[in-house]
Amino acid sequence: MSEPKQSKKTKKVPKKITVQKPEILVLGHRGNSGYLPENSIKAFKSCIDLPGVAGAEIDVQMTRDGEVIVYHDEDLTRFGGPKAKIPTTSWPEIKKIDIGTYYGTEYTGTTIPLLDDLMGLLPQENPDFLLNIELKISPVLKGENLKTFVNRLYTQVDSWIDPNKILFSSFNWDCLDMLRHFSQEMRLGVLTDQPDERGWISKVKQLNAEFLIVPMSKVDQEFVSLVKEELEAGIIAYTEFDYKLKDEELEMASQLIKLDIRGLIVNYPQDVHRLLE
Image: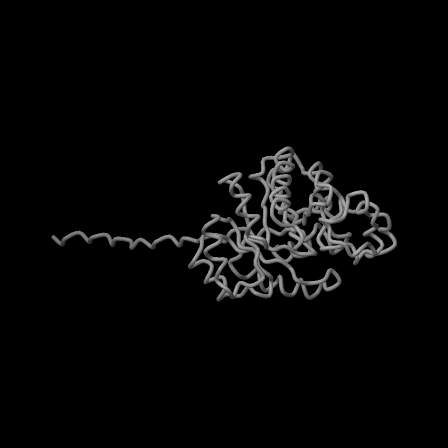
């Protein structure tokens, strides 16, 4: 009688584990500034209303009389105002400036908002909306005035929302040091336009910053590999293009979304989001 045949054992094939790439956050640069006046209420609100847009980046400064405004430039000359630096100009002078006509007559009458004007628009039903507040520090803002600005900004944000839901960033790392003093959980982004110099590595580590924020043109696979080797922070790339250069911005964004980055700050956030789809 022959021996019964042994059933062949099926060789187990290990399951392929796919590591999902984190979603790339698309933030509007100075709001939806490709279509609307930068840092305006309309540009900010548009980011809230656009599907797929994760948040908005805005710039803040302090006026001579202590108001925190949403504005980028050191002075008002681009919009026909005085050459005086923002920290030496009063809020009554600033709020008279029309920033809309620069973008087209249909926007005539658009003015510079206070930070509180924008904070009041934050969507309560969308806690994931990310507001990136960049502190713009004029050379004339020093010493106690600088401390006053940072303290006033933090206090204002805290009166509206948990500051941990805000991403604070600045090229002025002293400000980030001051903000970290307020909270160890605060979300911080170290801004640098010189990522070929290594000082940012120690600063990101010291602050335990969540993000390193650099120009789009500085980001390539070599840089991404360097950051991943040195840091746990994610990379956010910000646009260097004028709002009139839409095609150029989209072309560069289409290349960057192939890399392992965490976010893009762009003039055309919804158009860039469509590239991700």
